[in-house]
Amino acid sequence: MYWELKRRAPSGVPVYQQAPLQDDVWEALDGDKDDFLVYDRCGRLTFHIVLPYSFLHYPYVEAAIRATYHKNICNCSQQAAVFSKTNKQTNKQTSEQTKNTVIHPLHNTNT
Image (tube, rainbow, N blue to C red):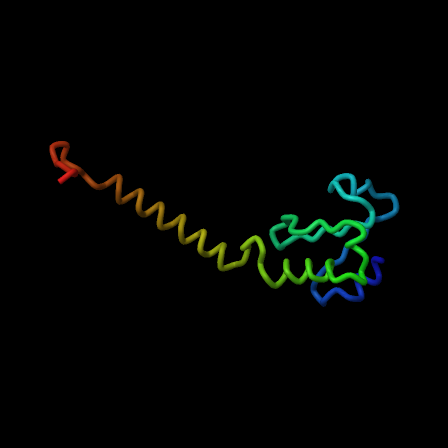
């Protein structure tokens, strides 16, 4: 099954297989030997496909890989990282401005 998936995987998409003497990866990942676990760029599990849906003649494995790769399910793009960084800077500037703003204690803000 590994070689079939490797053959069908687009270039640049890694396909892994457990080494014979390696600790049981399926137990660590809460899966079984014929399951497909698809992770996004951030390392988050996006799909866990179990038998009988993991047979490669069904479209589920390919669809899960394509959805994870093309649809950016967890929103972990570089744009999201830049947006997050910008938000942190904006929040920092806003809190600094708030600290420096003096409000007179007798000023009525309810008018």
